[in-house]
Image 1 (cartoon, rainbow, N blue to C red):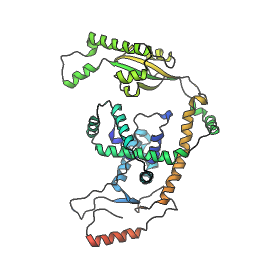
Image 2: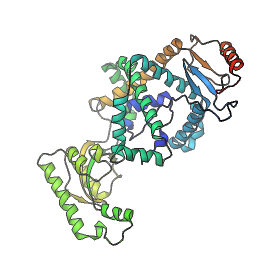
Image 3: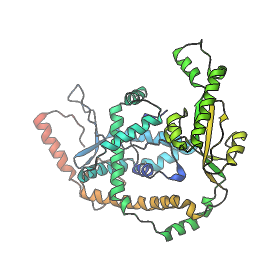
Image 4: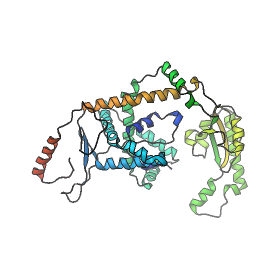
Length: 399
């Protein structure tokens, strides 16, 4: 199940990692979303201050509630990443939380200057999420979000901000990074020990399930219809369908297309891709069969507890250090990421120097530049004082 609660604020480095998504660290549905909504809450008692501003970035604000939500999310991520060292991970990153929020706001404002939008991309991304969750409509996706206690409008806004931020990074920073052949060779030579890999295969599947009638029975509460495993006719029909799909592939149909249209497995929308498997990760019978296959080969129909499956070996990697030509894209990505980190920090420092940023005492922007031109804090206080004299009431906590 997709976790909508993970669509909270992230540090900029995590956004970059999400954007570039290393092949050697494949992640499924790891949405790393930027949330930059400057939320102001008004109380029934108009004399009450119910929201505290901790930073101003040009005409935008960052509130304490945003900051605290980011801290909570960081704690959760650290716990999921490494429970034994969660406290240390949190302490290492906690000091940069405000920096990340300011970075993100600067990038969103830059997007406005560049005319970068995300409407089309947002629709595509939402549809991808819908397919990955095996939902039939956007209404179902909205209900799934609400079931997890998440506002669907907030979820879409967070996702839109993530897409826009990534576009700015790619356009303004990533497009200027170059990786040379000499750099690739040097990286390869100096990281050979880390590049050692076990024998593994990459599999795709087409599943004709024998479990669906039973599952449907449970949903409706009926108990008079037999499960597929107990119904010879249902079993025979499932096997016949699997054999027919195999025949279509043998005649030239693309495995991925057949999987998308016919597979009952959760990987159908990805063309059946199951990912990588090392020796020992599969059942002995499946391991013996698939590890003996060549890339591109498709197995005969195999009976499993879930139903009848066809397996395709899309890659077969031998144990050892692969030649550079076989992993060049991964080496390029690693080098690109190495260069992107400092280049992005330099770019964000430049944006800071062109912006007006104020941080409330007691909070720290670890990305601040000594060349930043900040508004004079006393002028804000004086303006607030004048405002208090004229209206005598305050709705926002201004520092």
